[in-house]
Every structure is written in structure tokens, then in C-alpha cells.
Image (tube, rainbow, N blue to C red):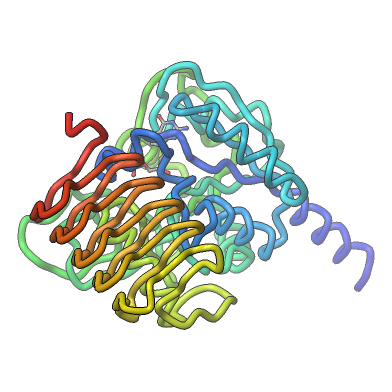
Length: 348
Ligand code: GTP
């Protein structure tokens, strides 16, 4: 490689990423009342590890993070993680929204930088995205994913050469479309003129404004694996996809039981089950399509399906728990039947 080639390589490895981790994760309450969504365990590891490992695998060695919500939980994570990528923490005393948080981190970047939603599991090729961004001399590049039913998402409408023309609201009827996949590559200059320290949305305010200013905003369509962990169903889906080998370098075989967990030999576990450290499943209990987090417990003869038990949550004996989230430390009493519920500690 010649000197010019080396220079390009150096520039690329100096790229930084702002990872958005400061949301309240309201759709995953009550789990997210004690654990921020990006730190919820996926296969027993805080999800943020997967995001940071993905950055590292793509040659990015610095991540900039901020969260006004449960900030202390992140301090512990950063202490435990250390190493590569380096993590730079930025204070965000009030929620600034996805756009405000990026603007708030602007002093920490120098040149093109990535922005990643901190709740997305993907194997998107970030270096290919960078190459596309450079080829287009883009001010902003937005990764997009094609979905068959775009109803839950806003649509990204593109013209010639994948130039973004408009962002369309969620369609009312089922229709295929390209949606914003929550990974962006930005030039700092494209954010000039936006007041800082203001709560604003990058997708609803910042990008439309850039298009209005006729800046080059381009889509980067890909067929990468993509899942946002925003809802209980998708949080479970992420575990099942890992068991199916759809994503991640590591192979799992379901049910996945942590070596410190205790499962009675008369209990039955389905294939789509992940049991965390020190969790317990007692005699004749049945668990399927569920995730049991650290130290949770399913009592004898209880049935747990399509549910998430938070850390230290308890299901009594002979209970039925279906499509339910049980908060950290919360309890489902003996013999109770809960369907489609959110069970909080103290049942408040
Ligand atoms: P819901 O409340 O369930 O919609 O979840 P959320 O709060 O995570 O919101 P959303 O999924 O729209 O957020 C997308 C990404 O941006 C997530 O990774 C959030 O953590 C992050 N995010 C949302 N709001 C803020 C904010 O005010 N500050 C920062 N730093 N990040 C945010």
C-alpha cells in the first residue's frame, strides 16, 4: 500500500461513533425502570457490548455516549468493559432527544462520524457505508432496511442515486418500504446552525431540515440483519435469532442455560429459552419462548411462556405467566394467572 493508501487507512481508523443510549425505553417498562434498555442483557451480556463489539469489528475505536437516564448504571458498565473501543462519556443533564444528544457530543468529534441507536442489533458493514458516504460526498448518510410491512416505521423516500427526498410518516396500511435503520454517518458541518442543548429528534427534525437546506443526504440500503430491541417481543426475538444463528459470531444451542443456574431435572424447558446466572426453575415447571434474567425463579408446577422475568423476579408455585414482563424483584404469587401484563415490584 502506498503512502496515500496509508493515509486513508489512518483517517478511517480515527472515525468515532456517537452511540445513543439515553432513552427511557418506555415500551420495555417495567424492565427499563431499573435497567436502561442498552444495558438489558442479551444472552447474558449487557446489550451495549454487542454494539461496541460491532464498532470494533468495523475498525472504530472510540465511542461517545451520554444518558440523562439511569446514568450511574452506565458508569458501572464502562468500568467493567474498559479496553477497545475507548468510551468517552458526555454529560447530558436533561434529555436532549436523539438530535440534541448528537449536537451535544459534537465537540468530541473531528471529521466524519457515525451515530448509532444504542438498541439495534445488526451486522451492518460500516466500512461499506463509509465508502458509499465518501463516493457521494454526502453531508449525511442514513442506513436503510427494506421491510415488508412498514406500518410501525417512518419511510425514507429516495430518488436518483439513493438521494433522500423526504421522510414519510408511518403508513396506515401494510406496505413494503425502506425504513430508517438507526445508523448514520455525518459530517460535523452539516450540523452547523442547529442550536445545541435543545431537545430535538434527529429523524423528525434534523434530517428534514438538512434536506430543506439542500445538503446531500443519502440512503445506504443494505440487507444486513437488523432488529431494534424496542419492544418485549423484539427483545425476545433477539434471543431467538441468536439461538437460530441468524446473527452473531457465537453459536448457541437452545435452551441456553447459564452454568450457575439451577434447573430441576423434572422441569421442562423449550428450545427458545435463555436462563441467566443463578436463576432457578423448580420441579415440574415449564418454560418456553422466555428469558429469565439473573437470579429470577420459577416455582414448582408453574408455566411461563413468551415472557421476561427481570433480575431477581419470582414466580410462585402453580402460576401461569404468559406474554408478561415481571420487573426486577417483582413477584407473581402462587397459583396466579397473568396474561399480557406488566408486573411491578410491590404490585404497584
Ligand atoms: P421508547 O421510549 O420505548 O420509544 O424507547 P427509547 O427511549 O429508547 O426511544 P427510541 O427507541 O426512539 O430511541 C432510539 C435510541 O435513541 C435509543 O437507543 C435511545 O436510548 C436513544 N435516545 C432516545 N432519546 C434520547 C435522549 O434524549 N438522549 C440520548 N442520549 N439518547 C436518547
